[in-house]
Image (cartoon, rainbow, N blue to C red):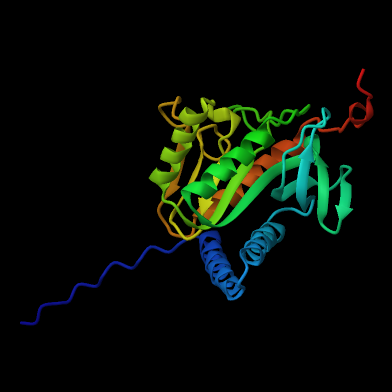
Length: 261
């Protein structure tokens, strides 16, 4: 008597949007390799910034413009060079040349640092830059849901194509806090994506997930399907954008021109 072969259970199907982001992630990684043809690090870095900007432009609403340059506040404090500045396109800007701008701190939705390969040194450099961005004065507070902590500082995102793992990133951030005797809120990125990996890290503040227990945990992460770390930045920025557009974000330019006494 022949034994009947068991039919294997079919693999679970991913949701349509998950499949979409799988394809997008594969394209971004493949395109990023093309820039390795260049012999200069700045060209490679700029090419990958363009890839990130193109992904965001194609997926987020068109009420955002994408700039590079510096963010300033009404006290003339500066952020230093920012790779990608997401700015509300219905508010004033300060053009310098081409896509290089100064941006008023109250017009900025988020700031993104892009790294080809995230090393310990690159992470430390990004944290230093985020510290400068988060020290800028803001006259707006962005709200989203009752469970979310209000954003009174500019959200900062670290986007790397490859590099350090999840545990190494969190360890290095905590080491930076101890070395510089700085509270995490003063410099920590709100989200970290390492595209080649299967995880993303975000603050445990309710802007992407409900606040997890224990509530004092500063970070939480997601890992699983290899493409959904791209989903994380998509949802996070969409949530921040909704909160930004719903807040009282009228820019008061007058303080930027007041003379020192």
